[in-house]
Image: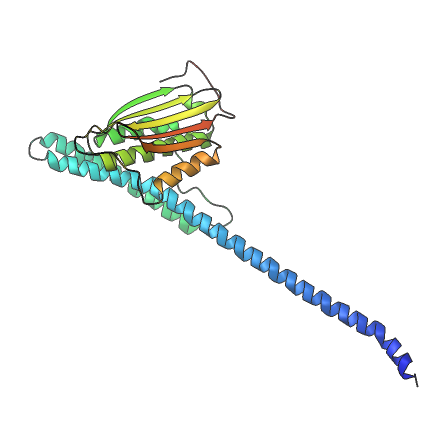
Length: 264
């Protein structure tokens, strides 16, 4: 028989291997648990970002249309007896805006139901500046007095720039309509140069007694505009002026085309 010391020496490699295996198993479990926690954190962050994206898109798609509808309805009621033809045009415009809004909402819901989760899907066809005139005309029909100035080749801008400019103007006009009311005078100016894009929406507060308009405090409008500008490396400002309210964004024009003669 082996002596006690010899048996201990013979068992030492086995014990060492067992201890190493146990340590490796613990390290492997610890690594797997850490990976699972990281995956869970990433999933939570992705879900939060997606909720924020959906909320912002729904705000952009639906909030503007609802503000226009409310203003048109108020205007139609005011002239229903004194000017039936104007009231009829207002109610016809309500129907047009409502149908477009319902169509967009159905598209959003359809995309949300059919999404495979691999990548965020666009919640609607994203607007570019070819639709800017239609946007301004819609808000004019709701009662705003809008001066529209455009300089430079807006359609040569990258799509991300065009979307940002469109959404900024849309939200600013919606706020002017919501807080200033019918008859408020607004100047929309977009200037494209080889270096930058400057967009400004100045609310001149023309409605007597309306006071200075205030930025929406629903947590989406102002924040959404600033996020879009920040994402493109630009500078955003919104604040009161002596006459009313000013929204202004300056965005670097990288990768866009510039044509000095291409002005509206």
